[in-house]
Structures are given as structure tokens and as C-alpha cells.
Length: 416
Image (cartoon, rainbow, N blue to C red):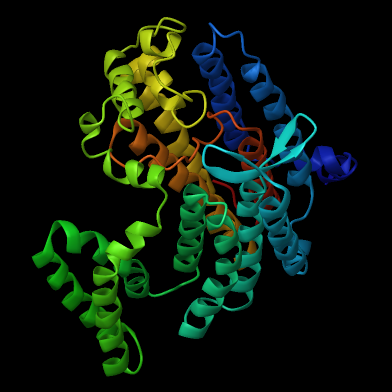
């Protein structure tokens, strides 16, 4: 009893900080610190200040995380439509007054600071979908369609910029949260099936035909009105295959290069394939232990364009080698593991879905970024969380972390 009384006399904020998931905080701070070192290494000859800005905004982000960790996340359930409205207004503002860079109009310039609303929109989407799925789980077709309708508005605004990478992250967040909200796994396959059909029809026609038949069978066994929905699934996949050429024409030229040159970057070694070729060389030259900090030839001589942002993992691979790369991957795995633990221990569905939304956002970005760096996926312009330079993306990740820490603080007393 005396111990309990003493604990209650602690200040509110200090008592809540004592319950923070410090392993999660430690991992994120460690990645942010390494990110600053790598950014400095990639710009050492230029004398850029991006590296210390990364640390400054990382410190600001950490403070935001700790503040959010002490604040109850429950009121966000009632504020989700306000959050959704602000998210869409900010995306509309980008289209009207935004500035363009690298083929996309994604930033709003305020003095010397550029804000990327599409990054913060990820958190807004997670909050909105968490509240909606908290009210009603994704066990019916109407609920799933409602979720996609809500997601479609900010997604369309983002694609108008255009920002394909962030659009893919939005899709990953939505699918991950729907799955956690008890959506039938077969429905998830059916949702993704048109995209797979559009790819298969061009590279493996026989496989495409088999895939269409399988989709019809999945619809037959998982959806109501079996005949109608199974025929509909077959028709949609056939249409996706036939319209793939038209969809291809809608992409920007740089997007087409990113989708094709990752398979054979040697076809255009001085153009669209240059960045990927240099990234492979950098990672391969790191071997087991790496060349050492500030000693990577590809990194120091700026052979990889924009290496401090999307291709920061190439610098890790060259200067810290296979061991350093594995340590980074292990840190991300631990972060994802802790997010799953927090989601499982949340006191209700809203908090659990918040954690899963953040998990979907982080894990998808990590997998796609590292895969595109080593040539296993097209270049999509998705940053590596906490490592890549990008003030808006860095703050977004810390805000998301703060919401998860709040869920952890107000979960049940059972700890892991």
C-alpha cells in the first residue's frame, strides 16, 4: 500500500513516461541516429546540413512522441471525421498552391520549410479507419466497401499530384487494417487480383487464364450470391487483363521506367537504370563488414543520385556491410514485433487497429524501400522510415509512434 500511494503522488506525465515501451523508443532513436550519420556521409563533400537537420527534427519528433504517449488516444474516436476532413483539405491545398519537385506536386512551401501533407495524411487515414472499424468490423461486404470509399477520396487526391509511392502506402494501410478487422482472407486476394491479372496477362498468358479461374472459385466459396459474384470476379479479372495496356498509358514516363528497368537496368545504364546499378555496386562492395564510415567510394563520390533520401540503405550496405545491414533489418523486425504485441494487448479494437495501421505503414515502406534498393522491386520513391532524409516523413513516423505508445500506456496491466 505505501508503494502504491507513493506512485500516485508522482506527476501525471512522469507516471505515464514510466510506462512507455522504451525498447520501441530506443530502436527508433537508434535508427534516427544512424540515419543522420548516413546522410552526413552521403553529403560529406558537399558540406550539406541535412544530417543535423535530420537529428534536430528527430529530437522534435521524439518530444512529440513522448507528449502523445502521455495523452489518452480515446478521444480520437469522436474526432475521426474532423481528422479526415483536415486530411483532405490539406491534400486539396497541395493541388492548388503546392510546389512541384521530381515530377510531383506534393509540397506546400512555408518560408524555407516545405511541408508534405501526403505524409501526415497517412496518420489521418489510420485514425479514421481505426474509428470506423472499431464501430463495425470488416465482416460484411458493405463495411469493406465503406472503408474503400473513405480511403478513395484522399487516395485520388494523392494520385492527382501524382504520388504513386504514397498511394501504394495508403493501399497497404487499408488492406492491413481490414485483415486485422476480420475481413475474409479470400476477399483480400480478390481485391488484389485485378492488379495481378494485369501483370500476368503480359508475362504469362496461360498463368493468367488459370488465375482468372481460381478467382472465380474463391468468389464462389467466400461471397454471397455465388453465381453473380463468381462471374463478376472472372469478368473483372478479364477486364483488368485486357485494359492493362490502357492503364500503362496513364502512367508518367518516369513511372514506366521505374516499373520496367528494375528487371534489367543494364538496358539503360546511363539513364533510368543508372541509379539502381550504382546502388547494387555500393551494397555489393560493402561485403561482410563494410568499407567503414565515410570510406565508401559510391557514397562519398555521389555516384547514387538522391542517396540521402530513398537510397539511404545503399550507404548502409556499402559502409557497414552485410553485418550492418542485418542489424538495421533486425531493428525494423523488433519494431514490427513490438507493434504486434501492443496491438494484441490493447484494451479495445480502436487502439489495436491504430497499432496495426502503423505496423502496415512502417513494414510496407521498409520492405518496398529495401527491395527497390537491391533491385527486387521497382523504384517507387518510398523513404526508409527514420533513416531517409525527409522532415515531413520523419515527423509523421514519430507522430504515429506516439499514438502507438499511448495505446501501450493505456492497455491492460499485462506486460510482455
